[in-house]
Length: 264
Image 1 (cartoon, rainbow, N blue to C red):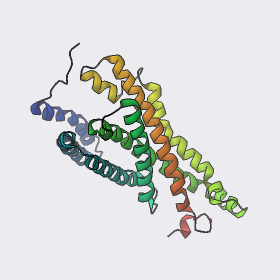
Image 2: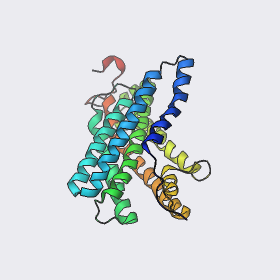
Image 3: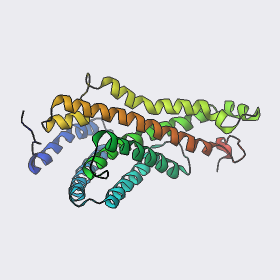
Image 4: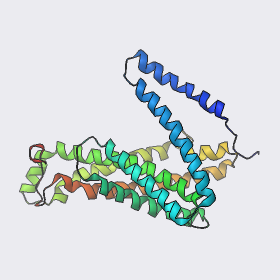
């Protein structure tokens, strides 16, 4: 079996952008108003990924533990901004909770995988740690956005029930707990659905990348299994922390539920 990545030339790379004409044509014909967004998203995809490639090339070559950690903090900060911007409900003070949730989940699970499974040497080896942490942060970012959005929309839909529970002596946590459960379940659903479809409906990204690079299919499957388990654990930690760190945003300091009319 041959090994090595098939090199894609810059001409072929930019020619591939013609694939986005499909989305652009649909947007134009149906008057969806997405043509500008499609063009901007395509340009950002090219610029950001090529820039990441150049940065990682030098990071792999000149890596030190503080440079690797600095890269991870930057990734988590960017993911925090994206996750909070995806939340439809207007909630103040989400940034610290989301940042902490992403930081704890990515660092904890990432180091467990790097040290206990991949056995990277040294532990901050950027070639292993950065891609693994990147997968965790990206998936946890989406899961947190879904969970927080579900949490607050569910609490708002239960406003009368929340008022009653608090009036009867329930604490804020007790009143919000059904919504917290619903939010955590919603956040866990996507990765569990992906795990169920892996190998039958889809060949996930890690496995596909290794196969394209010429890796043994069984070895690639083992790596993908580790990745799916890793993402499930990290997503669970992230959304549980995010929900329990943010649900109080709908309550006053005295534990009263804040309906729309009495919020700041």
